Image 1 (cartoon, one colour):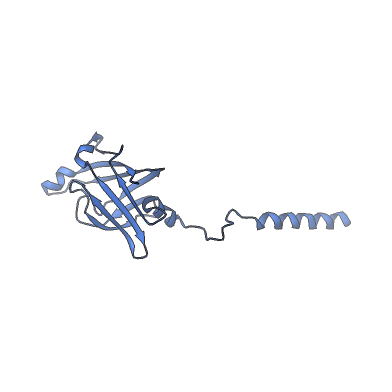
Image 2: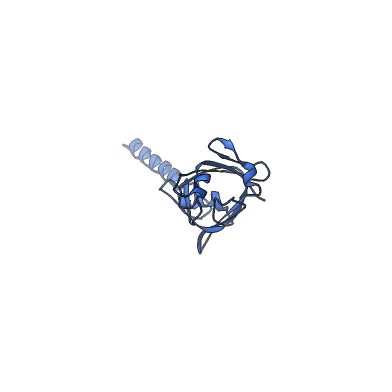
Length: 161
């Protein structure tokens, strides 16, 4: 009986020690999936700019069109007032500014507000270190200007320091 009691107390002590230890020793609350995804685009400080310069590229339907987007930059901003973006040298594909939101529950797709062809389209994104890939489709609509921009786009962007 004595060994049974001793084993019980030993097991209880080991259980308490192991369950008391956690990975989060900083005292800060765990980040949500949305917070983590927001930091991928907007950084820890809440604002990051991504560019085609310094090794980025753009393709449309599998053909390189980087020269059409020379100097392209997009800045994602996330702060207390919301999630916004600015874009320059977008060759009329993106609005110069607007809002962005996550699409779906996986936090790997965004939608940009605006009236240009890339607006209100689901844009998939992946980040690998200082590189960001945006993939999206601009469908062929009725008007000729946007029809010329229709296609499957891949933007491989570099973090601007």
